[in-house]
Length: 411
Ligand code: GLV
Ligand code: MN
Ligand code: MN
Image (cartoon, rainbow, N blue to C red; front, side, top):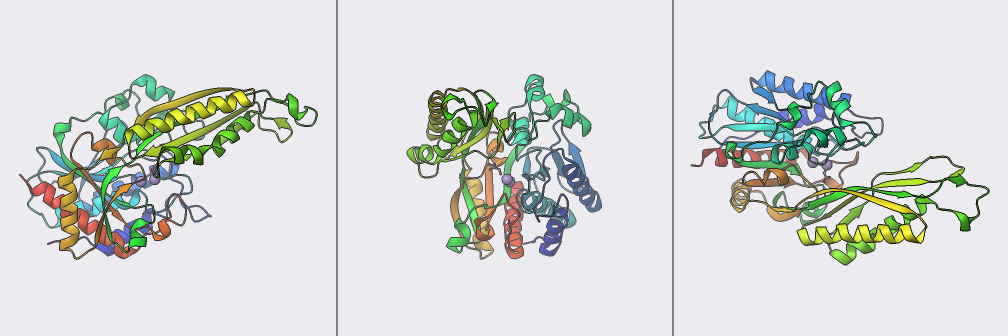
């Protein structure tokens, strides 16, 4: 049995965590930002240093392979993302990306005889600055030029501008889909990002399913007016409609199911003056559930509630919801391999669903896919306090290594 170099992996995590670090202690490496570009260059340097080969597809997904391992036939893929949410943490995406690199380095160093190629991957824009799970969606379904041209980022910037400025070619970005026959199986290591493993005192999570994701923007339009002279009874305040909708999210989620969640993470008003009644309010909605019918019910309940609140406050409302990413069940054979590896290494393991979205849910549409979780301190994630113990990092990476070897070895 070979193992990862835990000290090297934890040192890589610390080094990557310095790229995009802010004074808050959080990390902002949103996709195609200068920090994201710097992280990609740093990652490429690590690959070159190790003697590995890097290829990049039209949307910026990176595929790393070893000249010491097989190159032909369906491959085993493992990877995650280097981008972060604004003011995020040092482990979300970084762990799975660097652990896959560490596994490939170990296979390469030991010249482990395998039957199949192994690729370490970096998926573009997992956090959806421009589109949720962007890079893996480009692999699974592809994007048309019109879709790419229409995408805008959190800051309102056009994807096409940021992409071209970072050296991308929009035409090439329309040719990214991958033939399922090229992939034998995929596996991703990730922090849990929630409290369950820590609470239960378990070391490894064997992920059973990943939530479905719905979302988009809701825009309320009213009338801008003078904040001092317009009586309360004469206003069409767009922000009142938006606020009323948001306060209904807990009841909407509760009515659909225990694990249903609805969030407005971004809200903006126009024209945006302290002494002007808001004429427009735009919010993002992000809603999730493990069941496709419940996900659909959430979208319908949000739509109905937005229309009711618009009518109540004399507003109009437009909903622009993106096609939902369906929930998925992960492959039972890959799950068994992960559980077997945890047991062989004397680690406790717990089967559990993922409330966070992951590129693996797109990859599961292409090939048998599994995910491994390790505990998140205090269940905290998407914030500067995100932390996973170095011993858990090493445990997770060793289970990943065993799983990759098993998958790449089998007939
Ligand atoms: C990704 O982190 C997501 O769950 O949105
Ligand atoms: Mn994330
Ligand atoms: Mn992630």
